[in-house]
Length: 404
Image 1 (tube, helix red, strand yellow):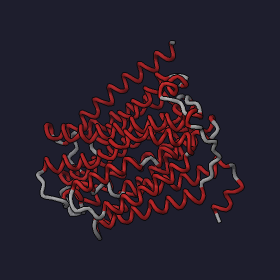
Image 2: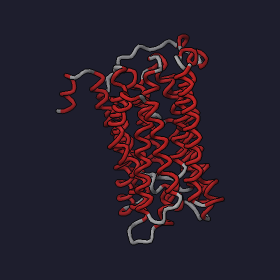
Image 3: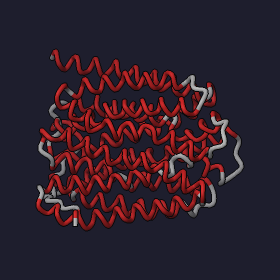
Image 4: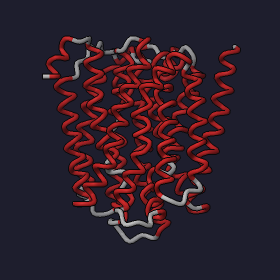
């Protein structure tokens, strides 16, 4: 009934609603396995603590390494074949791959499938690109902020759902459930997303050099992509081994898997509440200011996290980190949407996805390296230093733009 009523609203609002549901379900699917992924790795062999940390980080980051390589290819294909086709490809591919993850018998099979996940991924980035090309420019901050809430709401519920299911059944069951969720997203996209798209002929598809020349401000675009990389590095430096940190801090009777799910969900809670409001505020006061505020909040979260002695302290500080994400992520996406010509929007968003994916590779590897030398606390300090350097670079970059 509700979907039928959407026929009477503008197409961009209808697609925004459907895409919100899609990214919400994808957010659930991706995040529900994250809290126990290192624990799942632990069941696939006999590892020392350092080996478990390394394999957990490698399993996590492999997806984003392949995603960084293949995202520009899918972005170029989206500009020539349409974003809906890319949404269908990503959701169906994820459905098959996650079901196979529940059938693995050793860690290398899991790593291989995580690599395939990165190759066939890209649902959320293509959803962002579709919204950016369809929504009026003056509403882009609002619309992209709304879309962020869909993904983060799913990321909020996912850890609770995955942690609860894993506490009662098995880790493998969670992968099967995730595959079913992604299959539902494929059907929803196929049936209800409508796209008016004029294909770009292969000979008219711009080269990388042409894309750079078409950008009104290539320096700003690069700065935004670099900011996405650093944000993701800071977020993911601790993400893959959050359950191991919780296990170290936990001295109670509650399930470590459940507590890890709670801690992993904290950034999602903050982003869900704050992102739409911050998106609107950013449209009013300037997105560059919102990004600088986000850097400051990130430092307020990361530095104290190095000295926590209880799970509840870590949970509160991860909640604050989510507020930082809510200030920066919609702002970066909005600036990309406002400063990119529509004919290369998918390509530029794909480049942004590649930078973000590189951050998701660098983060876990950095976390694993730092943890082996300085323990888990060192990860938060290293991330804080990266954020501070990025804030200085971004401030300098935007200052020069204003005075030029």
